[in-house]
Length: 246
Ligand SMILES: [Fe+2]
Ligand SMILES: [Fe+2]
Image (cartoon, rainbow, N blue to C red):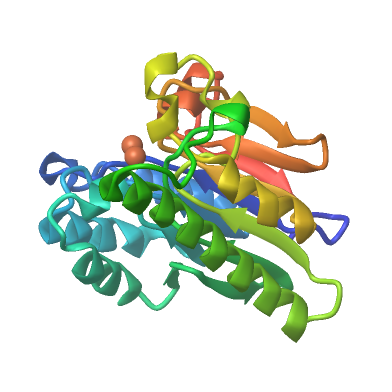
């Protein structure tokens, strides 16, 4: 906690833990534990979606003494072992991996989903045409629904709780700018933005767009940060985490 009773939330995404990363994250987790009260990790915990990488992450997390809230990313799904990865990482007593769920830490509500693509604003894909296209859109619709439910649960169970949302995919176009425009539909979906706005979320964190930009907002009301490790580095953060005080 800071002097004004605020909680320092550190956020990062796209850590892509690989076989060669043994011991390389100890310094990061030690440092972030000194400078924040909660750590948020927005997906792509592993590089190739292999459970061996999840085991390495759990080992590295031994140096982390603050609670960790995370979501999985598309890389964690690559080998269809995402359930196992979630299990392994959650075995650490201080780690919560959210997939349409919420958790309250230090009086703050955290809701998390992976999210999905589909594009933004007027160029958002609609439920039309081939079955495969509809299935693609349906995935985004469901992820937005799960996010909404997780946020609703926080509101039901806690009066006037401050809410933070985490997802891997972006809810807005603004924070993926810099990526090739051709791949915007695969970087996020505006469908994720609607529940964030309606449920008065204070801040949303995401990753996935490695060459996007750090800061954006939904209608000037919900702050959105792309905390992909690569974006933080490019934005001049010597330590690769972003601190938000709430
Ligand atoms: Fe990534
Ligand atoms: Fe990703």
